[in-house]
Amino acid sequence: MDGKIAVEAIKRKFERIDRKVIIPMQKGRAFKASMTDEGVMVDNLGNQPLLPWVVFQGAIDLLIRKGGRAEKGNAMASRLGAEGLPLDSIEGHIALTVYGKRPGESVFRRISPISAILVWAELCDTNPGELVLR
Image (tube, rainbow, N blue to C red; front, side):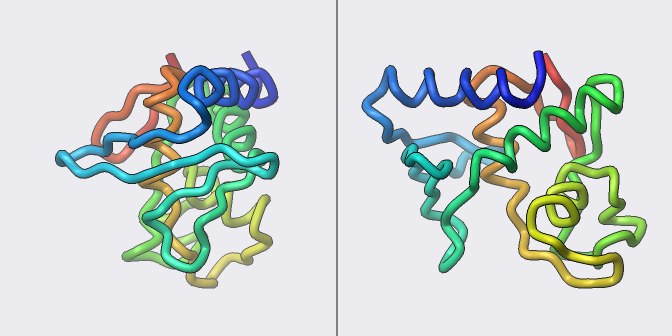
C-alpha cells in the first residue's frame, strides 16, 4: 500500500455510505465528515474544515517510511520541530509538506480528525500518541 492507494480506500468507504458519516474519536466524542472532490470536510476544525486528500496520502507515506509507526505530534503544546511536534510526526510532516509551515512556527491542530478518519477507514490503529499502519 502507498498513500495514493490509501486515499482510494478512504473514497470507496465514503462512497458506500453516501459520502457523509459520523466518525468516532477517542474518548467517546465524534465529528461529522463528508467527502468532496478536494478531500474531506469535517465539522471539528472551525473555519478550516477541509482536509485535502494529500493530507491522508502524506500521513500513510510517512507511516510506510517509518516502518508502520509514527508519533502523532502535538500542535497544541509545541511549535513545529520542537520535541512535542517533530518534523517526522504525522502532524509535523503534514504541517511542513502540505501547509508550508517552517520549523519554529505554530501549527493548526488537525491530527484528531486525520487519525480518526484513518482508523475509521481501517488503514491504521491508534495507540496513545502514535498511529500504526494496519
